[in-house]
Image (spheres, rainbow, N blue to C red):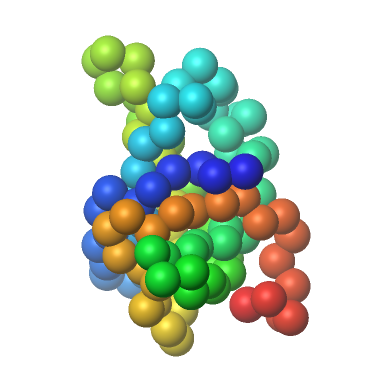
Length: 101
């Protein structure tokens, strides 16, 4: 399932890269349900169909004053972040394995 399109990303010192976005289809879901949907890892696909799996190190979900969910996922310090760019799509991926990391 597509979680969101990356609308921004940044590095947090000693934590890693955080990717963020919104998805109106998730606005009515609870924090726990969204976190469950994200799981242990995410698949990111850029506009050229390059894809890469990242560990979901931590998840931050905030709700705006107009009840819209903003989702941030910390992916640590991966070796290759070429697919991390605004507009890339983030999908739930399920359990993380060394085969897909």
